[in-house]
Amino acid sequence: MIMLFFAKTLKNKTMFNTITMVKKDTQRALVLQGGGALGAYEAGVFRVLYNWIKKDIPDDQNVFDIVAGTSIGAINAAFLVSYVIKRRRREENKTISESWEGSAEALEEFWKSGLASNVNLNKWWPFSWDEKSWTLGWETLYRTNSSIATAEAARRYYSAKESIIRGAPNVFALNLTPTIDSKFFDNFIVPNIWYRYDNSRLRGSLNEAIRFPIGTSFDDEEPRLLVISVDVEEGETVTFDSYGKDKGKSTRKSEYGDSPGPDGNEGTYERTIKYDKGIMVEHILASASVPEHYDYTLVPKEYDYTKTEEEKLADILNYNPKNYSRFWDGGILSNTPLRELITSHQDYWKKPVEKKTGTDTDNNIPDLEVYIIDVWPSVADYPVPSDLDGIRDLKNELTYQDKTPYDEKVATMVSDYYNLTNRLLKLAKDNNIPQEKIDEILNDNGKSLHRDGKSRPYRSLLEDRFDITKIIRIERSADENDIANKWCDFSLGTVSNLFEQGKNDARRTLQNK
Image (cartoon, rainbow, N blue to C red; front, top):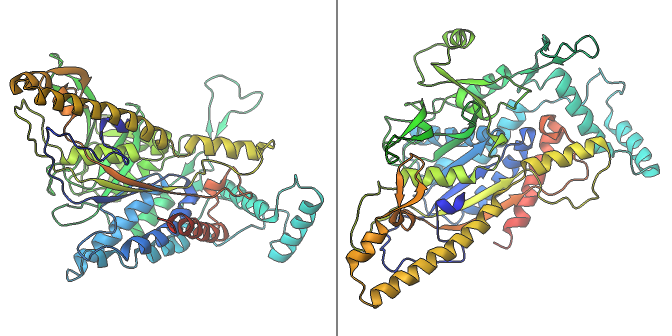
């Protein structure tokens, strides 16, 4: 929960009187949701958001210090960070903010030429694609019966259906060799056939557009990339991080599956994924492997950057669980990775908690200013659907929409406890309670544990905290032309519409900020 990571909220600026905090500058973070083709909406929002932030920041600042993403959000995030560091390293005379110039246009171009399909409908369908005739025909039907789809909804519906059957040229292809599932011996009645998709097309698109590995450094004033996936065996989110664990460039790894040691104090991590030179295409695909539609993505536990693509493929075909972990789409557990952003931010900056005395504690964790792009509307301003496609669409929106506002409410409540403790400590000090008595309480261990399994002293609940100074959400407006399979409609017409919708929603949200 977010409350574990910061005790001060947007409304509360009161600091612990007994603790001196030394802050670094506030960092800006961009959080990108998963949603398949809806990632084009994020590209549209980013163009407006980039211009809005860029005009007010000095040359020595990144537009975003951290970019965190899940699934298609991870793809957009990787593209942006790769673009920026490529410009920085190629043209060293550029200022930090100048390295971001052209990023919004490049992201849109990546979508138009690298991901989108330029075909709206295919001759397979019993309709010859003529936009004027198509629109006239469907709109005539719609005017006579409002339960019939609009022309635009029908275009999206059949474009998505084409992608499901034929694949999206630059993203995925249907594996025409089905898996016959005989587990329950029910294939004699209704064949239990399982078709899956091949994402090698997406791998090719990513390798062409993004420079891997993506390894960045705070010391070099480069943005941080956070990619969220799910380890299916451990059943928890895993964050792949472009920053080194040693605050340098030599050690990059993701540790999870914490298990306390036998004494209850010393903790170890059950699982470690190492990628010292930086995030690779496998880590991005691991974040975007939708269950059932794709097979698990295998990620090496220690990445060997010397292997060729052929050698990597051979290793996968000869799968050894000692060398690989299996991952699924991060959206299963965290489609809006705010929690993972806050955890990673704190873990990178905090100092080890030790027995301490006195009241002065150095805290150099930068505050965060967070921008979230929500591709799944939280509220539909049209009637609750009764048709099958509409019900499926509503189910998807409720499943993948932003759940973090609840975390914010809980954090506000925890902040009240924080302030109450602050006042009690001040009262104790004003009434000459000996400092050693206060230290004795603060250094005692509570019931909660750190994520590494170590016991957490009460003092640690009051330290290593930072403000989230603002959260700005830009949410995709409800659309009466939405369809259930909008996540797989990569047609150029839909992608272009999403660009414009993102820009319009961003302008409307930011105009009063």
